[in-house]
Length: 110
Image 1 (tube, rainbow, N blue to C red):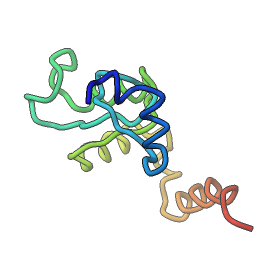
Image 2 (cartoon, rainbow, N blue to C red):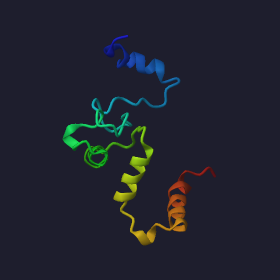
Image 3 (cartoon, one colour):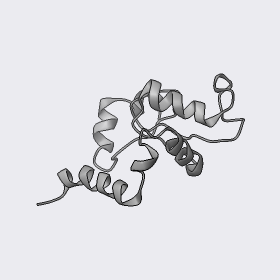
């Protein structure tokens, strides 16, 4: 199949029966879950000084993607910890659990 065929409305209508999300290459679109963020220098862009944190910063905060795929979850977790807007005093397990519960409750089934 060609790119034109797989991006057509006809094909999208066909695959929507069983496809929930599509993860395109990070250079092609934004506002989705681009793939695959890796820490090896050969995959890091030079304009980010080959620093995965700078790449996360750009895609998450400047472009505004709403998720991503990575083979290096530890690096992404560290980035999220370092850039978290929460103060150190609000990071107790009980407080974080309370915040998670408040986010989930609106979606709980009655």
